[in-house]
Image 1: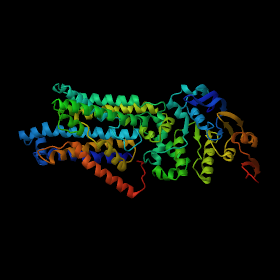
Image 2: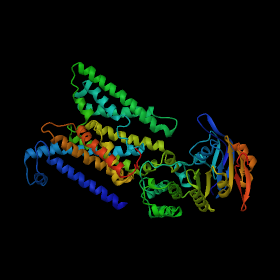
Image 3: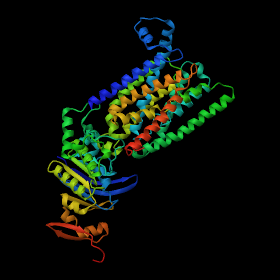
Image 4: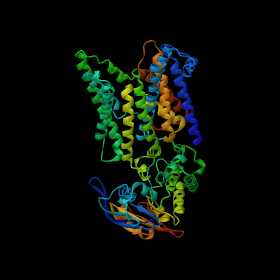
Length: 340
Length: 258
């Protein structure tokens, strides 16, 4: 077990380093890996390349890795918490809330204040999940999961209506709401070192906390009653984990919009490879999400230069067929072990 | 000490009472079976004894302590309980499942110690699940899986073991096997409280039984004194006969025209 953990995580770290290397090298202006090495060790000092790497590519790549890591990790926790491999970080309406929050800040012309839109998205996401959580409480802990998911679906529709209204009304009044597309499709074009620092802080703090709950997540897979017999208080556990996941997801959404599919596909694939034990699955999903989003963003930047595609399109374009192939391949190989 | 005392407890969900004013005591290290028709309150009662359902009236005692004053984690070190239907949502191996039994003994940041691992191996050995410890639990037969859940409960090192119909969905051989195993485990070290449907199995494996009917305790005592044709007819509205076979008595339902 200890060996397997070390091996799996080492492979994922190497993949991440590889993905970062490729990402640094590729782009509108390709820079060879040898040149990058030379730059790092100060043996070459081409100022243009320095600028491209240090101020454009590196923060963007690191942000991609951090956002991907956050989404992968949060997806794994949500799937464990809801005992459903189709859960993802946006299950409780955080995406809709964040988009509505961003739309509102733009519509109110608060865009001119620095950081207002990410903050609006962050608060919108928190607000949505809080609302879903309040409305999804039932008398019976056992029913909470269903009630939460239903409340999430209902409120996602509501927030989507709010966003559409803002688009329609203020867009009709001549306001430029194109920036909103960024939140809906997701993208890493707004990367800054400050975002990298903030998200790294949140990811590592919340991530460390979440990993501490791995065994309890394992126990939860036997059902809330069995978890309770093992001394766990399922409701308290759920509240703690949802709070952590919401903070982390909202932070990721604030800087990169609602990038789909990473939080769903990555934990699912990794569970097939490393197994369902959350002690390994959580860190592996974080690393896997980082690898996937780094690669997807590199494709997004270099596919149609100098245009740049929203990365959410790439994650869905690559993720969906791969996911389907995987399901098909698994179904063909053996009877479905994990209920879908 | 590992006894349970129910003092005039009433149990229910919302305003609907399932059990009314029930008092009984379960002694240390006995095998105690709750019997009764579907809906007579067996599962509800087990949930209360597990500390998962607060009585609306009355008190549940674990030894001399009030159950509701013990923290959930401390309680899980003394009482292990298995639900009637247990499913693992993800494809864990047997060993990963049984490891969860150590949860009540560990802090979040603690790794499994050498001692914890020894306890896990012991639980696997006792239940005969060691040989498939590294196989996914979803691939096992229902008889094997039932033994895995039992190993999980044993890894908790409880004083009291609660089992809700441990023989449900098992074929005849596995029913006997699992009850023999439970009986052997109890052997003066463990109080076992279980619910059963099969009266003859209860008579064979339990020290004492309680017969429940519509939320009330109808009879309590040794199987011999409780499982009389009169009591059974009152509870199940079925005519039965008691026959002697090789020194033990069996309850059978004769065909209508025999």
